[in-house]
Length: 265
Image 1 (tube, rainbow, N blue to C red):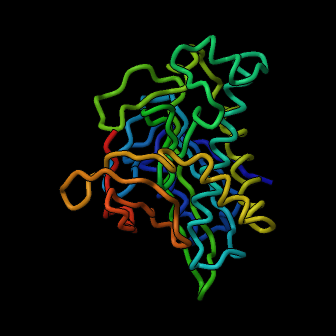
Image 2 (image 1 turned 180 degrees about the vertical axis):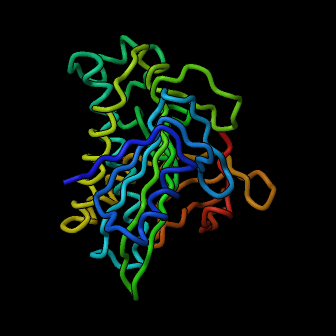
Image 3 (image 1 turned 45 degrees about the vertical axis):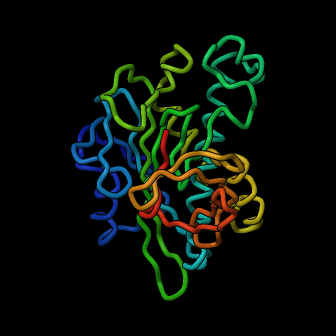
């Protein structure tokens, strides 16, 4: 059973859970906030969120069943859980009609189901070429196993204007024209994420394949920045450690971690 804690204002929900961890069993806690004063993205990136308009939350999960060497599986499962919840949101927004039918109602809606919400490696959620959500995971490890992971999520929901970030942010309301109740949306996202993480215990290969099926620019040629230079590369997959695998125009293989390559969007 998930325990929900809502705060009006906090530095970040991830930091809050990290502080609570020393004195409490935080497993299955879900902490949300109206405002984060120090919300973070990947690395040194910030996260813009208008107060009370979006979902900014963290959940703590016991992932001690997962080998430390395969911790990227957790990133894959969390991203899939969030994407699955967003699929349901769009379907519900249009009375349960299919995405193909909803596409007729939304000029910006891509026509193919796999193109609606995609996962930009390693775990951002994109709609088209615009960022809808970000995920930041802080994990503890014991020996060769994972322990407790704190999963922070920022999801743009009802905000209609953003600064001119390089990621070109978009919100659910901008996509559908509809406002959303944050409470039920939070519960849907949290439960879907938990379900996908639990699925890792039984069928991690299916998680890996489903992740690839949703991977932004998978098996396509695109431009990236590597070592300060622009390169045209073909994305072929992800290795067991979560590194991005690509091939260049001379058929040379490349493998990058998060600091080694940048998408051009």
